[in-house]
Image (cartoon, rainbow, N blue to C red; front, side, top):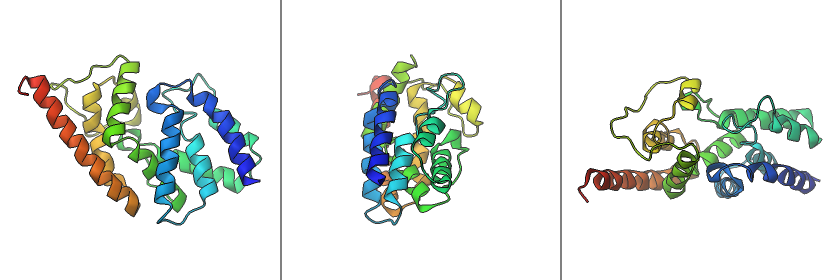
Amino acid sequence: MAENILEKCRAKVKGIYDTFDASHDWQHIERVLDNAKRIMETEEADPFIVELAVLLHDVSDPKYKKGDSDPESEILGSLGLPHAQASQIKQIIHQVSFKGGNGERPSSPEAMIVQDADRLDAIGAIGIARTFAYGGAKSRKLYDWDEKPRSEMTEEEYRNKPTSSTTHFYEKLLLLKYTMTTGTGKQIADERHQFMLSFLEQLKKETDGNA
């Protein structure tokens, strides 16, 4: 029964993610699922709830949502889940988002795992690739060393100001290491964080004409 629900959900969401740019496409979902499974090797949680939350966590992302549509609620409602499970999944998805530093702390083991799994895909080599993929899709500058990263902002300010892709590292990606809540998440994040620092150092050298 659980596998049938998961397969139904996969079929519904894949077509949506296939319309997004490469930063939030179906491959992103597959990587987050892999991250979540790796974390669950050392953390106890309901894998059914975790997978459904991962599958649905970006379908209603404000960056891509059209008008008043709400694919998350529509798909979740079509799966025939008990009210308690549906509510838990919606809460997890709500707690995943960074929201310019205004996001909620996860309130369950499942939410901790999904949040860490998603944030791990935002850092390291893949995080770098996704940042520039999204920036390219939005015609943003690669870098602007004169642009001052914001340390405090509302969710609306975070989403609506078209900063350069490199500025995004300082406003979000370099902060994510410190938001990890699971032991495995912290361990993986540390290595990926160091890689981003090395990348930014090299980028600065090359764009300063010193490399």
